[in-house]
Image 1: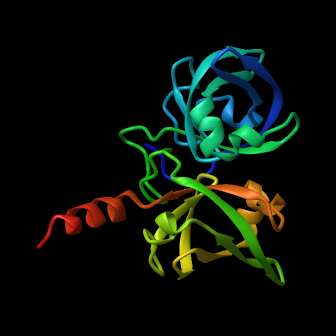
Image 2 (image 1 turned 45 degrees about the vertical axis):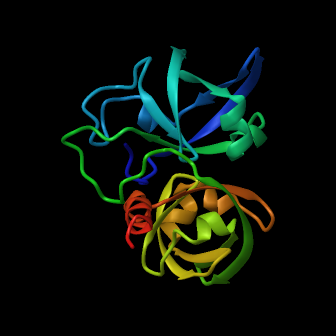
Length: 205
């Protein structure tokens, strides 16, 4: 489980093809290589880390570089399949039981891809819009929560196939959204509470 509060920007060192997927090697920021930032233990092999909101397992750590394995299904359903060496990625380690929940409950299970279709700047703020499949748009409500590339955000407007968010300067500087442009893909995970509510209502007469 994650919160959608990004701990730092990592940089993709390289990608290595494997028989059933790809090994993603990421250099995390120095701030994530210690036991600080409200985390009780440093990252170890077997830990869960969200990369652009997609939960992956650390399979090796060497020279302060983390390695992950992503299968073909993950690569096809998320923007991890479009990564290249030197790309920046959002990183968040899983939430400890005594951690602070500052965002919302994020599972790291990406529902699908969205496409940036709006970038309106007003000073240092940005209103960003995304096109999404109707299966994703139907799970959103205005003022509800959504994870975009693993970032916990509040929805401003919600339509059947698109939504918008308002991004503060900190979010733009501390996450990949400050580097996104029109037409680029982002990982979308809708609020788990909304999913359960929708499933429950399906069973009502």
